[in-house]
Length: 152
Image (cartoon, rainbow, N blue to C red; front, side, top):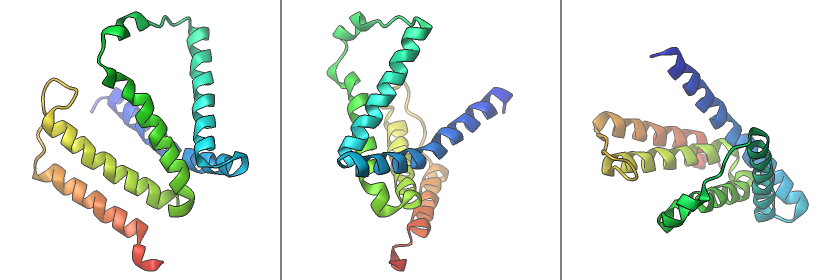
């Protein structure tokens, strides 16, 4: 594996490590200012301001003209992101960060395998073989061990 690939994998791990902290921060914010949806909204608002400031400072051009001819589903990313942040903000205080993130990761792995198999939004489908399915099963086993519902 090249040095560039290791750097990208490390960055992905760092971003993943930030997700439970983001969920806890948003939940605390929501508890103080009006609930989980308000906390999620403020999170998106702050993120939008930061990204907007970056675009202005970097003098990045925004090409929305081409977007008018694109299908409506291309705008779903924001909707899916808002749904994710709102649900995590709502559930993380109830499930705990470890259980919540394990469940999220299991959902991600399962969906990613299906997206790979059927080639959704990419040119060629990718193989989903027994080894990859075994990996998803191991992730689920980890979710069960971390969540430990029998301990409640």
